[in-house]
Image (tube, rainbow, N blue to C red):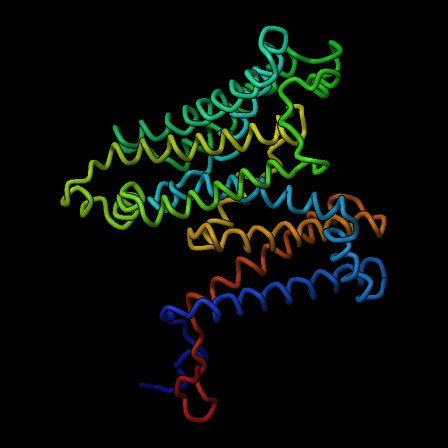
Length: 367
């Protein structure tokens, strides 16, 4: 073979890396992302790079309130990430987390507004929880039913359901807007606080965080030690194998998406009833799409999702703080967030593949 025709490098599939090596690569990607963000900020603002890094840290840990906001955002992102994980482990590409959260949030707002004068507060909260889970489950169950019966494309189906949910929320915002013509609902039950999730002590978001922490533990046990979790894994590996061993694949698909959608709906309830106390078309903040990345980066492991969610929330809040501290608009924050996500996602390539370079003189592969 003519050596001059040999490529400079070639790519091969890497064997399974130890967990510490994989996370070492991800850690290196985070450092590179911070360096790149600092470089871009310095070029735009002329500020000291150390001041940029201090600003990133200050965005999450600059005050007790910011720390609580960090953990609240972490809990909400982790919650929806846990919700979509059973579907992804089954290789059902549920990108409808946004719509399922909006459906749950809409059901929650409906209970808060329509039942505030007829039921006591505790009963309203119970109705909020049940109705949000049911609404999210329905929103996830519809594409699952069509997938199980007619093998429709779940990616497109769940994506389209997002748009329907957004328009439904927009419609009811006009119905419930206060005052009329305002185009927004405002704070729901601000004076009576009917339907507001209780505050534990003086910690406003502690209940949300505790609920998600319990959900994380339950989901870990469910996916790894339950019969349903085993069936989800088998269906994800091969539907043919699953049918061969007697697993009812259609039933597993529908059941899993009912669970996934229901948990997304519960996350919507936490946002409306426990955090924002209002309903908007943007209340989800893109978490349904970010959760896809969190779930995949963590390899569908709920424990690793905690760290992955923390990294993303920490870096995103840091990017926002840079934008605010240096007098830049929100678009600059989005640019920095994009740079950070690019490096984090790109690190997965080096975890799964390796480059082999040839020696300049010998023409042989060099790892």
